[in-house]
Amino acid sequence: MIIPCEVAVKSVVPAVKALMAQTLVEKHGLKQGQAAELLGISQSAVSKYTHRIRGCIIRIGDVEEVQVHIESMVTLITNGGYERADLLRLFCQACEAIRGKGLMCECCKRADPGLVISECRLCFSSNEKRAVGKRKRQLRR
Image 1 (spheres, one colour):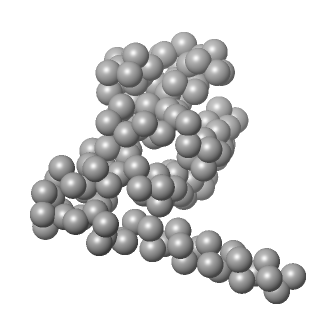
Image 2 (cartoon, rainbow, N blue to C red):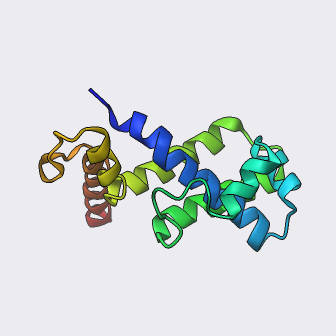
């Protein structure tokens, strides 16, 4: 049995780190070594992320819900003095957004060929519950 978090470790986590590295280097003008230091990874890893050699199994660069979390994480680490829990919370929210959009489904299918994607609602359930809660709160106002 392969659980979604195992698949996320090999697909979503590298994609998020790649997008963070690309944002730091391309949008914020940092050198690869500087980005590596902020991300706690090697300069060669940043190079592979920015050249799209690593972290490109799932394409998340144009997903607005993910971009918001990436920008927030980049802002936290570039400003310094952040709480680790805040960064991790944002990372998990980015992962939830990716999963909620169904972007990880094909990776899960490759990991578990017996999986019937149309019957699997695991990744969507948390986002759906959150959306229903948000709609209820809006209606009460």
